[in-house]
Length: 112
Length: 454
Image (tube, rainbow over all chains, first blue to last red; front, side, top):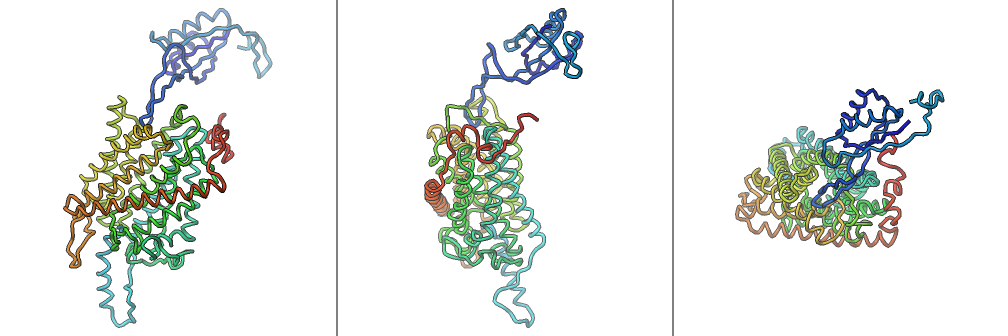
């Protein structure tokens, strides 16, 4: 099992969600986040005072899938989130040791 | 001012009383309540209260950081309670009892002889109690406006004590001078320096704005200012607040006619026109300088326009009101966005930049644009209407306006300095640095504006 964390533009959350569901992946967690990578922030003005905002609004999509679904999931996320411009985000993949379903204590892939 | 319409009615009533048939006549004529006027004045009173809560509370609340939102709202709300009690006990009397040229007497303390019948000088067609409660709403919002200057760093206890004393020491005398019987600046009742102030440009906005400046300088900057960013936590709240202020201001300005006749209409139209002009001019200047017209800029401009038209509302022609608004939006923008940073004081929510500057500007422009067609305030002994403002040829009025402005600045600076010093030396003004960092909501009130987990 692997965890896929994708940091994407907030405006692309719907497209990513749809692409994942179309690829047969159900179950996900979406977190509102702020951050930046290589993308620069922007400038805001409040009553003439300039504020540079370097942490931009992002969304983090988290899913945990069986090993054989990882590539499908990544392709779906990219299809939903890519604009080709800087700021599209990143995907992190990591190993998951264990999954437990709280309702009935079921463990392993069956609990996904 | 405020009671111009009534001055025409008084002789009329005198005439009616004079024709009375053989009852034992007293020297004072019986004034009757107009239900139409009273209805409008009660609605206006409610509208002006709405300007403080929720209007100003939301406007200011949105401009501070999340950790201080309740403290700022509570400061405005506290005035709704504290000033009301003071007003009932003593400060109404100090403002509106006939006394000296500078301050009223104590006859109306504890609401003695504040009747349900009219007083010829305080709205001859509405109960004096209506006049009293209408004026109370002005007394509430004025100190509440000051809280914008010391937001995010003053102790609640110090704020409450300081503003209660301020209400007695600065507000009541100023209200007496401009609107009270025998007041030095009262243009409608023959004051020595007749200052045109229809709805409180000097009494409300100069006093609160200038006192705000003194507070900002005396208390010092917020921790981290200006290096650490402290942007508004919710322009949405401020937006709602500003729109409530705009609507409430119709009660503030048009209500100041103290009747529901054509003078109220004139003040209503002028208020609206000036606000539109100022909202646009502030936003346009921002658009040129920052490449974008901001929502905060547009609403700040609207408030600046409302402030500037306040003294002029019942004296000028509608097109003059637009000019006043356009000028106010540009001037207040530069005050807030440029001059404040050059001078380096931390007027957190720009109470001085908007109310002090807008109020001063409005008072001066009133002396220029006042029209005797709209409001024949000055008459010679034969009853002939005299010119009002500079454009009509009464250049002297500009000097009178400057006199009123000077007195308002003077009493505000001296009164505020003395009171801040007293409160500072007794209970202290500022929260501790660690309390300031944690936020005033938790440290002063033991609660938070927003749940972290819903």
